[in-house]
Image (cartoon, rainbow, N blue to C red; front, side, top):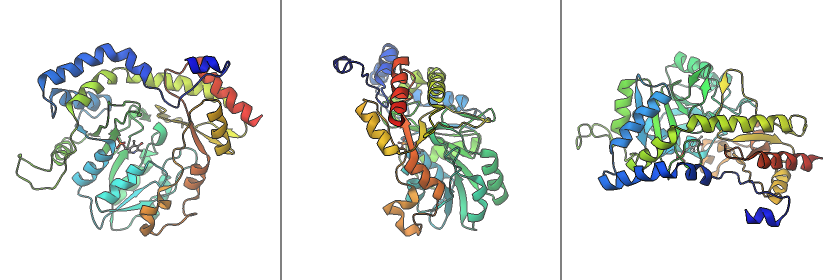
Length: 379
Ligand SMILES: *Cc1c(COP(=O)(O)O)cnc(C)c1O
C-alpha cells in the first residue's frame, strides 16, 4: 500500500479487510451469481435448499434441518414467533451482547430479563438464571459471544427443569464447538447471521436457523414465509424472513473455506496470546478447555482501554469496542426498570474490552505491528 510506504515503518492493519478473501474466490463466485441471474429465480431458488442442507450438516443438525432467513436478527425474531413467544412472556438473556439479541425479544412483545455475565467467557452466568425465572418465563437466549459457546449444559439443565426453550444466539459462532458438539445443535434452535463481518459473511444481509427437531424445522419454515400453510391459508402470523437465492449461492462457495479461515484466526490468536502474555495491563481471551472458538472477534481486556484505542488508531491499527453500553442501560429499555450497577461484570466488560484485527489474511508483519504497538503503549 502506498500509504504504508509513505510513512516508512508504519503498516496499516484494518480491523477487517474482506477484499483478499473475495479476490481468492472471485472466479468461483461470479459464475454462481450469473447462474442465479440467468435463472431469474431470486426467491427460494435451489441454492437456498442446498445451503440449508449444507449448514444443517455443518452444524450437526441433520436430524432436523436449517431454515435460511433474511438476517441474524430475523432468525431470532422468527424463532421466537415459531416458539409462540409474545406479549406477557419473559425471556432470559445477557445484557452484554449485540443489540439484536434483546431487540428481537422486545419486538415480539416479550420482556427481556437479564442475568450478569461470567467474567472469564463474557457469556451469561448460568448459575444466575434460576433466580430470575418466573411463571412467565418461556425461553433463555444464551449468546456465544465473540465465538466462544456459553455453558450449554448448565443452561439446558435449568431450562429443562422449568420447561423452557433455549435459543442459541450463535450469530458469532458458526463452527464453534462445546464439548465437541457444534453451536446451533445444542439448544432448541440456533440462530446464525451472515452479516458480511461474521466469519461466514454474505454479500449483504442473511441468516439461518438450525434445529435438531424436524417438526420444529417445518414450523420455522412456515413462519419465515408469513405463517401460511398451505400458501394463502394462515393459522399464524409470520413474516417475510426469506433468504435471497443470490446470498445462498454466494454463501455456498464460502462455506467450503470456512474451517480453513477459522484455523487462520486461531493461528493469529495464538500469536497475540504469546506476544501479549507478559503485558500485565492486558488480559487476552480465555477459551475454556471444553470450547473451541472461531474467534469472530479477538477481544482483550485492557487497562486504559480508550487510551490504547487512540494509540492504535495513530498506528493505523483498527479496533472496535463490542459493546460500549450494556443493554440494560439503553434508553429504549429504560421501562424495564434496570439501572447502572445492576450487572457489574457486564458493565466492567463494557469499559474494558477492545477487539483487535484477527481475520485470517493478516500477515506476520501486521500481527507483529499490533503486538509491538500495544506493548509500546504500556511501556
Ligand atoms: C450479528 C449479530 C446478530 C444479528 O445479526 P444480523 O444478521 O446483523 O441481523 C445477533 N446477535 C449477535 C450476537 C450478533 O453478533
